[in-house]
Structures are given as C-alpha cells and as structure tokens.
Length: 394
Picture 1: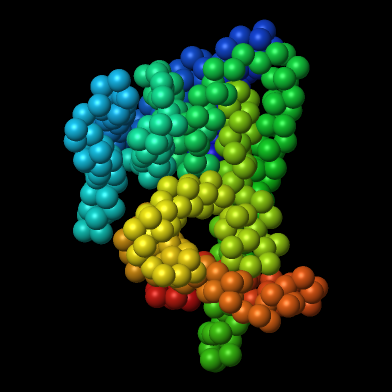
Picture 2 (picture 1 turned 135 degrees about the vertical axis):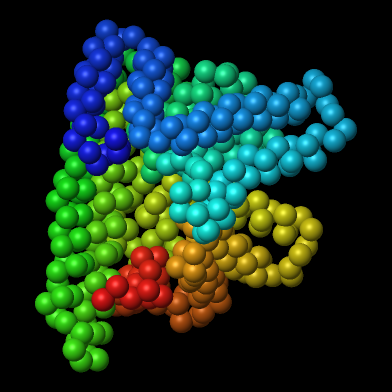
C-alpha cells in the first residue's frame, strides 16, 4: 500500500481519523492512539516487502539504542573523558545505513533499504545533535518511538522537529482547541488532494503530451519541446510534492500534531534565497540549522577564511551539494545540488557586494526582473533534477 496514492490508504484513513475525532471530542490524549495507528499503517506499507520490514525494524531498534547511548554519554552528572569522540562515532553510525543504501542502489536497484529511510534518518540525526547541544534533556523511549514512526510524514516529509513534536503529543487539548485544529487540517487535506490529483495530473499531461505535439523535427521545435517538457515537469513536481505535503499536514492536525507547512507560494520568490525559504521548507531549514550554521560557526571559530562572505558562499555550496547527494548519488542529483549551491553563493555575493543591487533592490522593475531570472534558474534546476539535461527523454 502506498501512502497518499492508493485508494486503500484513503479508505483506511476514515476509521483512523474517525477514532481520533472521537478521542479529541472527549478531550482524551491522542499520543498512544496515534502511535498504534502509525505502527499498523507502517506494517501495511511494508507488507509487500518483508526484507524492507525487517530492515526497518532493525534500523528502528538501532536508532533507539544510539539515542539512549548518546543521552547517557552526554549526561552532565556522568561526564566521560572521550564523550565527544564517542558522540561523533554514534552520529556516524546513525548516518551509515543511509549512506550504504545510497551507494548500494547505484549497483543494485533492489539493494536492501526501505521507503522513508531518508526522512527517518533526518529525524534520528537531529535528535542526536540536539542531545549533544543540550536542547533535548529527557526524551522518553515512547516519545522517540512515536516521533520516528509517525506515519503521515514517514515516506516524504515534511521533516518534523522532535521538541515541537513531543510538546504536541503530550498536549491535552480542549474540545474547542482540537476541533479548531481539525477544521484547519481538513482544509489542508482537501487542498492537498486537489493539488495532487488535479494539478499534478494536468502537469503530467502537459509534460508528456504537449512536447509530442510540438515534435523535434527541427532544432527550434526541439528547443520548444524541451522547454515545454521542463515547464510541465515543474508543474507536476510542485503539485505532486506540495499535494501530499499538504495532506500530511492535514492528517497530522487530525492526530493532534501540528505538522509544519512545507511549501509557501515558491513561484512568487524574487531571488533564489527566497525560493528556498518557500520550497521544501522543512528540508532547507533542517540543512540551514544542522549543516550551514554549524559550518559557518566552525569557520568563524577557527578563522578558516578572512571574509564572512567567503564563509557563507562555501557554506551554501556544501549545504546544497549535501542536499543533492541526499537525493541520490547519480549525476542528475549531485549536479542539481552543486548548481543550487552556486546559485545561492552568487545571490549572497550580489546582495553583499553589488552596489547596483543595493541601489535598485526595492524598485518594482528590478523585482520583476529578479523574479523572472529566478524562475528560469529554478526551472532549469528541475530539468537537471528530473534527468532531462543528461538523459533527454524526448
């Protein structure tokens, strides 16, 4: 069973949400019910592949052990002389299964892994890092388990943050509070369904049908067909991805968890920084907090570079290259990440150093031109991401 795609999934949501509504109406806690529902849904998700289920269970147990180990290791009351080294080893071990999987699928498409592995790794790594930072002091076993298995966001995000999640799951809401959350969730879910099943379908039709009408008989026609294909793919990806992200938000609200919004009108962005503050927001903010900011802090502390602009530019390139590698180790994804890293670095340089930008950045004509250039850059980037540039499907 596929989440947010197959009829069986939506049929199962009826009793799952129905019971949650009854519990919310009675002002009962939803955490244990939500965790039980998540376990059932994940068992159904992996029912077609027992090896994936076994690997997921092993990964889950492994993550729980590492989280408890790091929490004990970093306990202020029991300092260990090598605790930072051991923490780093634990962090590397937490990332290792995903890294091995990403390398393995290059040689064997059925290499052992499981759907949602990338997103659960983000969550488990975040817990280890914030435990190291002292931000997570006492996360219980059940809280951590529910955080990892929460099914609305399991396969494709949005990426949750543990402290917010634990706060929501332990909150006993009043009837009015829950019904208000449910009402907002229903709106998000219906909007997501329209995005995914109407908007994405139109984008997919445009991507495959219109280029065939234009044809590739001449050089001009081939250019036109490729542009239309890239625009169709951009439309398809946005509505598909935003669609199930919105549905995950709505379903999370019904279970009492305020899942963060993942898209905020990305095609209104006036520069590439603005775009990444609107597109796959939870991913870009996760990378900002746990990669970019940490690299920048280390660079300033150790005085690696003389210029703050150089630090920021290199941080953007490292940040987005890692994002591309996270998607996969193929040339399409890696170049996509490097490309966006260079775009963000260029934007940083322009905003910090270009006097013309500083003089005209508030002018309407400049904003329009900046928006147009940004959209061209975004569409070309998604052509890289889709494989259109390196493996032309037309």
